[in-house]
Image 1 (tube, each protein chain N blue to C red):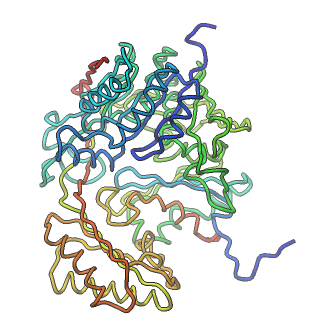
Image 2: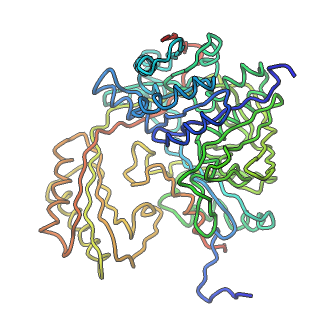
Image 3: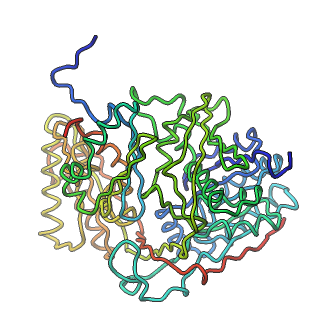
Length: 446
Length: 110
């Protein structure tokens, strides 16, 4: 069988910015992988990365990059596994340079690290560009813009692989594109159905353990074995575009028809039109076959032409997020917590005249589902949680002060005050004509 | 055979499993029945109108339901249902990850 027709093995080494590391090392060591992908960037984490880069121009990449690279580079080098990641976040160049330093420290010579740039499209967008899902244009953002990143596709990654990169580091590389790129190269896929098949693999794999039993357990209803030692997924991809999703033996979790289904439409809107930079994928006719023993086969994704535009995430300064809390327990905890909430609302709005939106939750009674109208009034262990986002630092500090003051001035038995103020970045999405976005790559060699 | 208790509520959770995701200020929840025989029931009781009626403050935007007939699943796409989205919402769960349990917690009746 020709080399390019053999089954290609891709593993996930991270499915989000703070994902576990030790199971990735285990997978790299035992998985016989061609490629390991570490997907570490979301709408939330790209905003944080811009915040970090503003504070220090040498930062702005994934805060766990050092630890991940130190642990994975030697193992991946030994197994001949290529690493592809978007851990570069808001600063891929700094991430690639840092990775080269780490590789040198570890005594790894001849390692080719490709840095992909060109996702930063600030300067390429006009102020009258409208937002994607809401009224307004870029011009209506009245705060400092900290970053504009276009989602780059597989076409930005393949040239770096062609150049022999052992490690590919980018910023806003689209999640499934990091999986599709090596598959396109290996199988020489070009037609839309094949690109959709590779995109399906990437989509299922990109959230790591969300397909191997993570984010699935509900005790007594959906029990999952040994979640503490859950394994990352492996995709065994065939030339016809079908793939078996599986995991290493002797790891926790499981792969079943149900885990695959939940991931199939995770963050998907119209199942017939899943838009990526590479293809318009149709997942509505996907076939799922559970072969048992943690082996589930997927096939039958279909594709149409890729979109003419790329999605861009714009991050801008939103001041600070202030959060503070205090707890009440025992009989009448709920009513004491509600009284505390009334006091805080009166103090912040009436006494101090705060203008920013203030959210007051009572954890244990009404918090996550408060807006949905669901309230549990029987709890004997509640926590007042007060939050605001403001561009006025003094207002933020005042919020913490007033919640702490409840220790002496509030209802009986309140304890456990904590307060924190963190810089806030907000994001909007726009589209950009892809013909004006020009991704580039540069190799850093040890 | 155990009889259901008088106060026992039969929830969507008893016949289906679900996962929520977010993009911007839009939430989606995909939901799948364990037993294909229950799919007709799920489609009947979990309608766009029901969801808007149960959570009027949260579901103020357009709600769309997609059906994956051969896999026995539904996908609800709820616009403007994340209180601004992950970087704007003041909800502790700014992703709306828990929205799956809003639907799973509904009673199995219209």
